[in-house]
Image 1: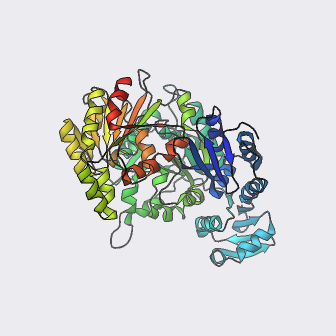
Image 2: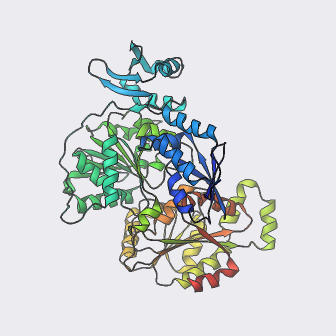
Image 3: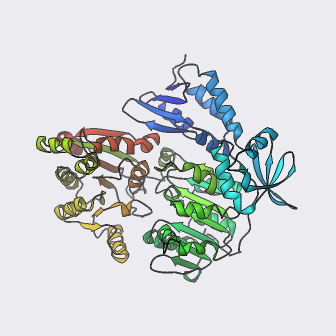
Length: 551
């Protein structure tokens, strides 16, 4: 027995004592392979998963380093069976390899013949394979490269894809390095991607994922298709590329609901690609419209199902996924791993914060008591109605107004899910409102006015969750969210993490109705940020004044 902060249990759960002086070090050590499940005040629960171990293996961690992280930080002797299981699981990655054979094209090669025999007898996999060349190698139909990787992951034998990539069409792209420099972690991320050829880079919001994309494009020197969440994001990407690279207006095309341009660098929205007409996706042909050398997926954790299906056919193209979190609420992290690629680089948020590249943040959860009459109505409501009754309760308005008064003049975002709630708050606060119904031109005007300091407060719906660059925003008040979405919580805090000119901390408030589903969802949403080292101070609405005065 030692004085470690971690308790490692045989069911692959890890208990981390938050107040322990070595807790932060232990959290950083287990983050590459363990996922946070619960984050109450004193003890956080993590889970070791097969996918987490395979991602760590692909990112360069071996079983010895994972075992050392567990043993070094554990308070008690780590169960021997668990250590063996960790080693065996990590050893499964790469026992099967996809290779390019000069004579036969794409082949599946086994470093362990028994594994190949096992998968050859799997009904789902057999149709994807062709002639057997020898005891360790079998031909793969090239069109099945992505589907085969998905299927092998599901049967527990993730293949290492070493088959290489088509070069694609060459196109000169250089960084304007006389005017700016990549940060060290951005260079490391680009190198990790180049070494792997395809995969995902995980960086905090505000840490410059777009610049990693630009650096990868410059490294590849190839035509590039960039897929983004919305039109505003597309135009921000274009502005960044024009400012940071040698690309010109004529070389960058926008492919969205409003514009259909195909150029050497084309920025397309997920929305236009997934749009259906008469049961088909007419714009998916964009993927083959040019001989792309690189496909960049922005906010890869939001990738829609049709784009996954399309990506299965793009395995010969280099693919770069960018995200702040690999968490997907639909449980399709395995699809990202097999189709976009494994995690190639991951920088903990607190590490980037300590280097001064993102702003520190204080997180506060304000719990509001529901009036007695409304409590009875809530208790008698249908289960499907309770989420909205709690999340959009009008009692939250007074709390938001109090926070707004305290931070008067500071760049503030009020963020929510329900439009009627947001309309009411915008009216009370005398603030402009941005929702999905706001025309793109008007959104850009308001965002520009906010960046310029002409307005200091915006009320925004979930359209502002992703890929919106508002560098000076320093206060956010979250009044409602998409149920228990961890990725949304991370993105909303991310709106505040650009370093501030005066070095001040960001303040992130989430207003929650006590003893309702709203409170339960808030606890779930906070899990990812707790994993990154952000602690929420929980206060009653009645105590808010003292907290605000102290802040």
